[in-house]
Image (cartoon, helix red, strand yellow):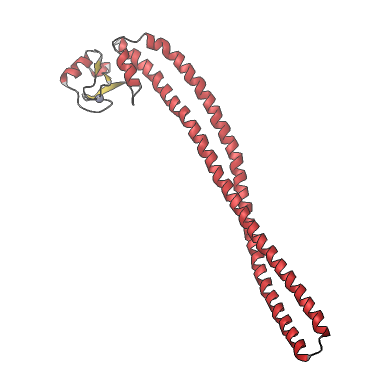
Amino acid sequence: MKTWIKDVLELQVADMKTKRMNRRFKDIPKEKQEIISGMEVEKGKVSKAKEKMMETEKEIKSLEMKMDSIKARINDMQQKSAIVKKNDEYKAFLNEIASQKSFISSLETKQLNYFEQLDADKKTLSSAEKSLKTMENELEESIKDLEEMENVLQSEIEKALQTRKPLLEKLDPEVLPTYTRLIKKDGEPLVRVHNNTCGFCHLKLTPQTVNDAKKGQVTCCDSCGHLIYFRDEEI
Ligand SMILES: [Zn+2]
């Protein structure tokens, strides 16, 4: 195997690893954001459940006030009925009192339904709070893990860049510009030839290109421009 091929392969292994680490490193802020957004959704559920519970409590309170005022009126009518002289006036009071009492009874039924609703609201709130709490604990852990990974990757990338320097310096000047251009693109810059096709784009190579590559010359794929090589045993 020609020296330039060995050198490029060695550098390429290091560079591909760095590229993977860089991609992972760049994804971390997005991952953090997704975790935080997920928790915002849970927070929204908790405040919605709280609002619903407060509304139900307000309804209960308002029914209570309404019933108190009716009870006061009934009390007032009872006192007045005791002192009226005329029978029909007395009967009118009794009718009105009976009608107001039945009204209170209907309000009580309504209030009972609201109490049942309040129980359900409390359960919804408690389950939302529980799930938020779990998420908050997990969030702390997940963010911590991501930050640790961020630090590890940063130091690994710096190390890899240091390792790369001498490898890059000894690279054949004939290959260097092509390699530098290709490493910024997708895939490995230097690929093996399989059945006379390029290992990157898988298109057929011309016989001239195949011959040049077999000789170990610096050769590029006719279609995609990736550097190509043959393994010694395949020549
Ligand atoms: Zn190709």
